[in-house]
Length: 318
Image 1 (cartoon, rainbow, N blue to C red):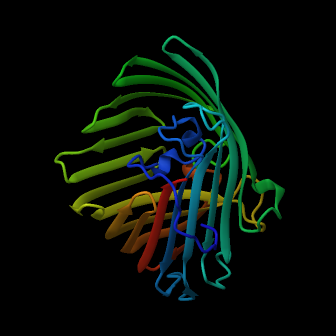
Image 2: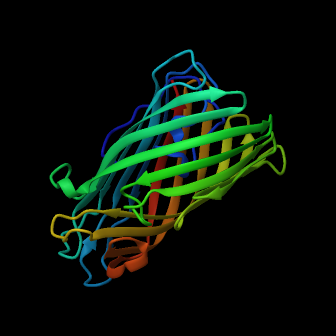
């Protein structure tokens, strides 16, 4: 969500798509299945002019979310990898209840530490900034840490044990949280069940693909895609999102949280190896702003009116 003009990315595209839950840090430990040096995912969205329901002040939301990873060893399947996320939201309002902009920027390094037999140990370290005044408030700086022990049971199944510290999280941001997971993967059905992440990728028929993900406490997405013809797809998408930002005027241990729900539909064009772009129209609702330490103690601040929007999304390897 940073205001930048993006070019269509050249590279070797693949059907492997990162879900939002796989944004850094988790994306940096995923294996590389191509010879590419980088993987990117970029989403640009602009809502129609709206208003704040509390007092009728105008708003005009512009949103940009970008994340990806860069491989530091071009020949290794499991390589030390830099991961980034840049997020920018312009709320387009002068309402005193809300800031004019919100930003979240993070950088992590993920690396394999040990590999013996069917066991693999990886760690991730990094930091980020989430606030309304880029790098102007040291309280908005947060740390990121992740330890993952994975065991391959057979070609289709893996189990994971994890320990996560995410200083920007919506639930217990000051406490390292243990996690676990079981991943099953075949051509038509792949899923991960566990904590704090679950996802499902299912091909019920050759032209159809369902992709569902959930991230504790309430983040989630669901996408249904249908292949119209070679390289052209129709899709429908739902997303629920909650994230907190440190605001200059707020006291310590109090953040502004933004929650939204969105539904959209559109077309996706894939022309290898040059283009993977989606165009969509959608509807944003339940756009709530709350304040507190985390999801356990949030108080209402403001609510934006429901609004239609247009969106562009680019993906690629290069």
